[in-house]
Amino acid sequence: MPLSFALENEKRKIIKIGGDEKIHHFLESLGFVVGAEVSVISRVNGNIIVSIKDSRVAISKTIANKIMV
Image (cartoon, rainbow, N blue to C red; front, side, top):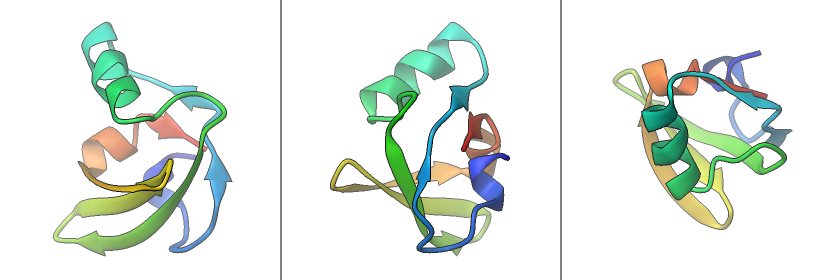
């Protein structure tokens, strides 16, 4: 399921990242790699704040839809 559908404070593992090479590189630089553990902290105006590798990152719902957990 896409990360955008995950419940808040539920730890999930990334199983696949969709999109083109530019999106892969951008997400990889933020720590979004296959096998990484991620959890949704909150949702604000269509954006999603997630916790990944001891950091908090805000991503758009469009980007979150490309991350399968």
